[in-house]
Amino acid sequence: MRGTGVPSFRRTALAGAVLATALGGGAILVACGAGGQDGAADGPARLSVADSYIPLPPAGGMAAGYLTVRNDGGQDQLVKVSSPAAQSVTMHRSTASTMEQVERLDVPAHGALQLARGGTHLMIMGWQKTPALGDELELDLTFARTGTISVKVPVKELTYRPGQQ
Ligand SMILES: [Cu+2]
Image (cartoon, rainbow, N blue to C red; front, side, top):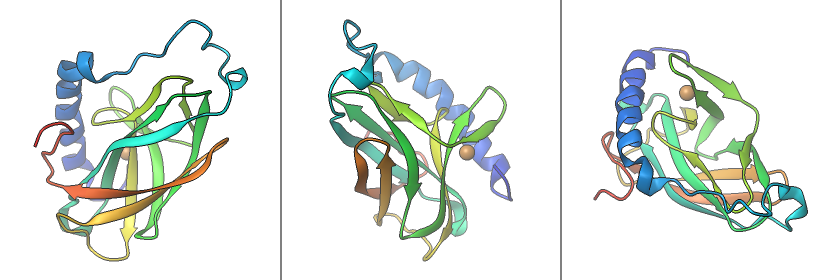
């Protein structure tokens, strides 16, 4: 995290962490367990993307991106994210007090990779055009085994949570 947007984003992320904990029981997909430990031997990954959204960034500044990658097959890894709408999309992992950029994120076999408030997320910078509520922005998610999946991600209010209209 760099730049002028840091303090307000951090407050948002911390508030999100509390809510994510409260909702966690219903939202977390648990891996199937038996036989799923050796994901690479478990056949091809079968990925789908759900619950994607971008909270409206203040004044066209840095935005976060959230989504869930569901996997009904063998393990995969998210290795790159890009967008024709922005110069830079990076993957970040939140820790208790800060966040760090990561180069890849595991998508467990028969499980899910969740990018959610207070946890792992995307940071999007350098918009070609200032995003507005209701826009749909393309994100190109590249996976080590599956290749690239392109999704249209809606821009939502800052307070939006998936499953809450
Ligand atoms: Cu970040």
